[in-house]
Length: 205
Image 1: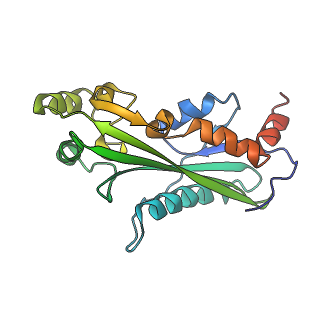
Image 2: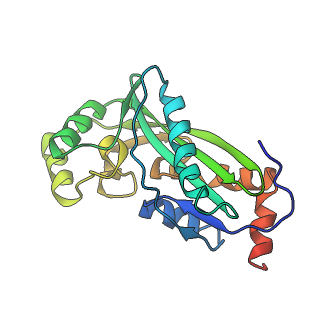
């Protein structure tokens, strides 16, 4: 991990997720959004956590290579049920399958965050974990959700912040982590690494 130093930096979010954009905006720091052109692929032999961490790092690095003077934030969220990763569904049938798997069960949501500033020699990150318990779902509830808010862009085929939030019986841990960006942990990490002051400096706050 490189030292954060004192040089001011601009922040770039390497994500196309509107949910991450909305969450990051709550920190009150202006940022630019640049979507990485990147294919998310699991590699043989990786643990779920290894996959999550690698994807976040590679997303951040892809954008950081284009903007080496800035601080780039990459993130990846995965849903894990019985040690199996439930990624973004390929289609509605796949989403239906995932929701049936999650019905009445507890699963884990992990979000890896990677921060890279190439010119400053900084690279750091962390993983936040939240346990989520689903109620037992009725078929008509699943079909209604798929009809009104098709979750094809969401890991595990649901978004806790949308209509499917009524499926969630209990959350143990950070709610924002399930949405896609653990705000409290991110803020603390930025402070601990000295990055928070550098972001404030560039915006003259």
